[in-house]
Length: 295
Image 1 (cartoon, rainbow, N blue to C red):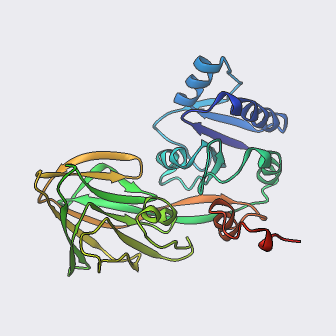
Image 2: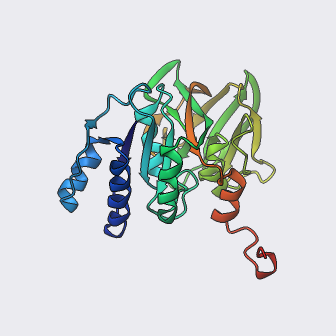
């Protein structure tokens, strides 16, 4: 059995948890692959260099070689880990070394039980949709996003005019600071901060959430995940910022952006005692009132 490990940075206080995790897996004779940047960080920052069987890079991972990718960090790290498993089917398990963590939802005090689950294969996987982006019928180098694709104003003073079409039918022109197109996975991220709805990953939808729209009658919209969304931007600055999860770049106006569900999917590891609604309740602290405590 072989697991892979990916991370970007960890605090010194989390290092003991990581060492315990690695030691526990190696005691169970689990082979461990480690992403090269993370392996270098552990060596250079903490002088920690466990006996990894293989160091992998941008070539990614293969399902026949690796059973699970362990993402060590927060949700941002989880999003970056998608690059290493895209198209492979290798499921991702997010271990939270940070704060909130909807995707990286396994806490340090759950790691011993987590190791028991994954080494005995007592877990399931959930399939999550990715978004795909085309710009003027051309694919960008990064053409996918797990959480959302955002169109944001580049200048601080002027709004964007975003002409939106669904399946070739004109929807509206958003006069706003920007527009977010999110998956259900991303409904608890940037879209939520913009007033968008929380959507269970079981739902096959896409979410359009305007950012600070000037017209107060404009509201978030949910469409089927087989919809093709076409967007064209006008701005006074002549450009705008395109975000795809944690990646950002400037684009010039008048380009046609086409967003749809990607043919590739991402698999996320879940455990018997974890479910989506429990994560929502705990992370958002719903019902945090002594009158609602379980007896």
